[in-house]
Length: 399
Image 1 (tube, helix red, strand yellow):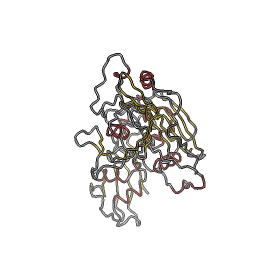
Image 2 (cartoon, one colour):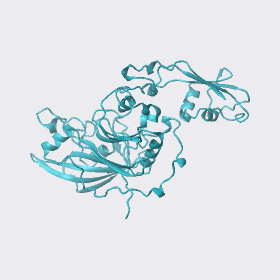
Image 3 (cartoon, one colour):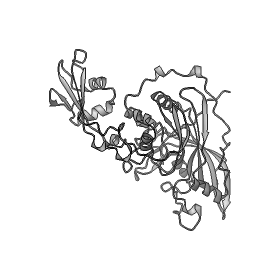
């Protein structure tokens, strides 16, 4: 038996409205319980995790180390402390910066498809997906909270994968916990189909599989590089040429990319590593000249020419194979038109391997998956060395 006292709930993101949400003013929540026979002699951190399943184990460890837990009124900072019968345990749950970012901010969302389980959107370039330093209230997550109250009840507002800020294209968002669990599982099993379009300088081979591990650049925290170091993560990108052109004596290529892994900046890193950086990429340039204002779209294109054009997945509820296509943004279209590339209003067929619906009899039941206890129990790739589940493209087919 435990008690919970919220000193102020006015900032709970589930009640905030628009930019006026007052989540930054949320005060600490104090929870307490008395140690019973079952908990007698058990470790403090394990007992707290059992009593408060909505708080992740890593968060509990941090709260203990910060002095937010008391035993009979005395601060305890050791997670391995053994509890005694009838001790009073109190934990002060403090709001974190990342929690305070969960406020609803109305914004225009380009909805491609929606039902009771999923929302498929076409993310514009320039929109950050999840709150982080410098972007606490202008992200897709903030917009989802304003779009539908259902997202306030889900970890990370139903987000299961990300796109870079300046990459446009298709994303799927879960509208129920059941759907979120299933989509995360599909991403982990690499049965989600994602195809990217990229425009590069140079003549790319007809087909190329880039198999090169990736790690953060030790000389520049904003970049990632291919590496043979032990800390580098395996990464593989499958590239196929869609069209090649020559403009003023210079070659350019339109390629379609699918990823076996989903590392941060993977396509951009891999394409630069083989000598074909994306047009406009401000970070992975490979000595390309900086964009110039000479009236041309090519020289003024100031973001990476990368677009998530196709998305295919098994519907979390029906098991039906569903697929969507999104045209690139206007600046991307203008670039293609200027270079003589296209058409851009239909999917490419260079891979020629459509996803075939997986036999539902082979699928695991939801009871085998578990439930979401806290949004930070998920690994969405926010850490620099973790897989970010940005894309997976291994399809299951019937031969």
